[in-house]
View 1: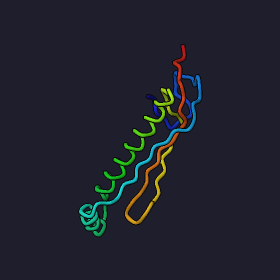
View 2: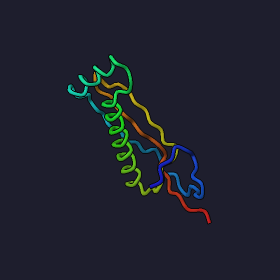
View 3: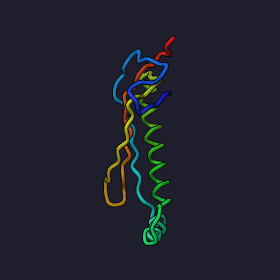
View 4: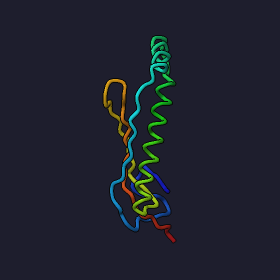
Length: 107
């Protein structure tokens, strides 16, 4: 599966557009991670606990989007975008979406 943020992929052409596909993941903060992150917040610097949490949410959202595209018979997803939003205090949603396509290699 080719997943790209661009609207075209070098060496390929879109044979058929199959439609919008998306995946999402909602993650809540962990009290233990919150305590450690809170201490780091006081000292400054990257909050590794939250970086890891968002990376995991992104990967799960991508996996779900790819599964939806595969169910449509796609071999590519173009114009992929990410969006996140706070769902409730301490929980955030990561959404990944794009256009499922059938790509053909150019001769």
